[in-house]
Structure formats: structure tokens, C-alpha cells
Image (cartoon, rainbow, N blue to C red; front, side, top):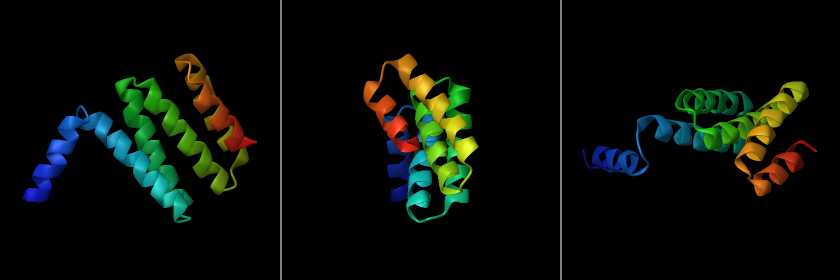
Length: 109
């Protein structure tokens, strides 16, 4: 019960269930990729992308595409990785996030 209250409080502090789910899915994807579990990381990134797209949150859509690009690259799906990276890059440019633009370009180089 105490842990459930803490999780509920964290969700409320982060601004709602949908965005929290996207953020948690991306965190999960990062961990899975670090563990060499590319397929699971891809699924988690796709879940985050779906949620952030549904919410229309371009910042988290871009982050989701970026993690998805890494997952695809880890699975040696280079063309799919480049497609996801291009989408992330376009969103980062639209948002004016130069640092993230550079990071995604470095990721796929």
C-alpha cells in the first residue's frame, strides 16, 4: 500500500497517466537496450511512441523515435533505424533542440 501511494504520487507529479506511461516505457527501453535485449527495448520504445503520439507530445515523440532508432540499430535493422532517426531529427529541429539534433546525428553516424 505505501509503495502504491508513492507511485500514484509520482504519476500525479509528472502530470498524468499517459505521459508518465510514455516516460516509464522509454526508461524501460533504455534499461533493456543496456542489457542487450534489443527486441524488448524496441517494443518498449514503440509503446512510448504510441502514447506520446496519441498525446501529441512532440518532445517525447522525438525521444521515442531516438530510442527506437538505437533499438533497431542494435537489431541490425539499419534502414529502419535510419527512418526512426530521421523522424527524431525532424522533430528535434521543429522543437529547436540543437543538442538533441547533434546527438541523433552522432547516434546514426
